[in-house]
Amino acid sequence: MIRILIADDHAIVRGGLRQILVTTADIVVTEEAGQGPEVIEKLRTSEIDLLLLDLNMPGLSGIDLIRRVRADRPALPVLVLSIHNEAQVASRALRAGATGYVTKDSDPEVLLAAIRKLADGGRFIDPKLVDAMVFEKYTGDMPPHEILSNREFQVLQMLASGKSINDIAGTCALSAKTISTHKMRLMQKLGLSNNAEVIRYTIRQGLITG
Image (cartoon, rainbow, N blue to C red; front, top):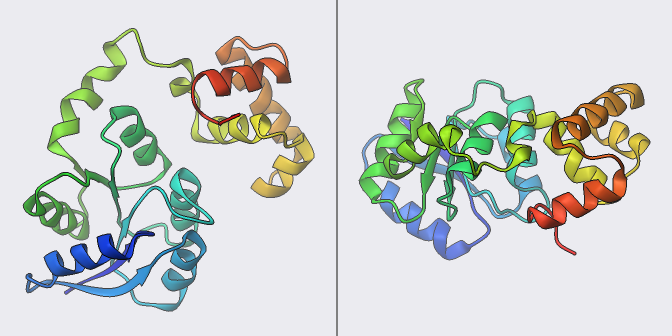
């Protein structure tokens, strides 16, 4: 039996997923969560074989939540179920530690196939996204920040939100020297010279608002 934690901030979505999974003989919904911190807590207190995760969760969401889950439960399969059907979003989720990615407009059969493959130790990418993910690196329109490592991308976002090197170091549990190195590398890769350019870049690319 595959024990699932459904993590989505919409009760109707969770209910719909539950109705799909209840039709199977080998999958059971053990827990549900509507907020990011709740996901972390339930993973620590319940026996879960697979996390079915929406990227947009209150409190802690997206890439940060995947990283936290991966740190706490390194071997846990994480299947992202998202409204985002862009190859870049899927690629970043997978690089952060997700083991599968399915869009919410997929057929139920695709979702069930993904759950079973991940539970069996495999990986799964929504068939509609496979070609885009394979060929995106050969197109000339990939945004520059896609070449950043996950840690560099995290530092980029935190710098853009106004956090200092020491603030970022505290959040990431790393030394200020290490964060400074990440900052230097990401700015070199993006061709940026100062914090003002970092903020302008992230706004232009839609990585932050304001």
